[in-house]
Image (cartoon, rainbow, N blue to C red; front, side, top):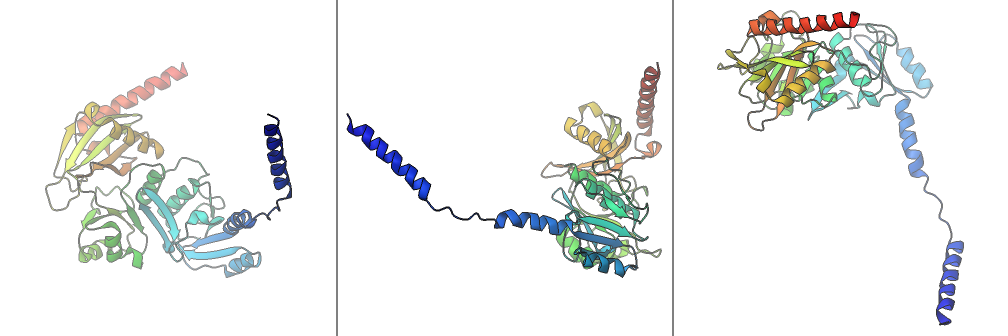
Length: 354
């Protein structure tokens, strides 16, 4: 009985001595220093965007003297993409995401407003701000976390994708580059693909389904100068749906389809429209339309959605925050719903005043 306590005591002593005299290996400090070094390098980098001739080469030199990596690019060197529902704005030469720079600054006039809006919203969603003097002075752009305003289709696509809403893959065509040629877009988006102007409001006149390089060249060349387009993956469908969003409600749902060869179902190309019972339409799709309108700051909006013919997935094609209500299909139902919406707003305002 006395042997067991002696054995346990011996094992305990041996363990203590082993721990006490085991040599300590030096700490591996490589990992601890690598991440901060990489982060510091990113923070000490500047992307300078200009719309024409860069008039301050001395600025880049002065920044370099301070140990700041400076990249100077024309705005056409930016690539605006949405791939698999994930937006990315990068500079084409190195492929670096603009949000990975410590600072993005515009320099001088000439940068298109839709691109500025897209860039501002993209950086804001990542806790960054666009600085510069291209259309607004120092501090141009929204503060980080501010609700984006999306007047252009590129800006809308990036903002909606950033919020997790389903948007077909797209690429913004600001200027002619190899990555915006027909061959590059066909490889990226498949054929046919859709080209749309950067702004809505033409009733769909400039929206087309492109199948060949000849069609692409004809549609994107303009006698008035370059027209900036959005190239978007085509979603095979049996028609599109227009949902009228009034506040948090969707009182009107219209199905539009085309029996012609255009494959496009907007106001210009749709051959006929059908009024759906809004209360019986897919509740998740209605909620998605309300979210998209609210995200872009619209109390009244016409949201166009489409369902993939085979996968049954839903996608948002566009949000019109200033719809011509009297020109929409079933204008009587649309304007009547709008009148009810305004009446509710006025009653609510009157009760608040009381």
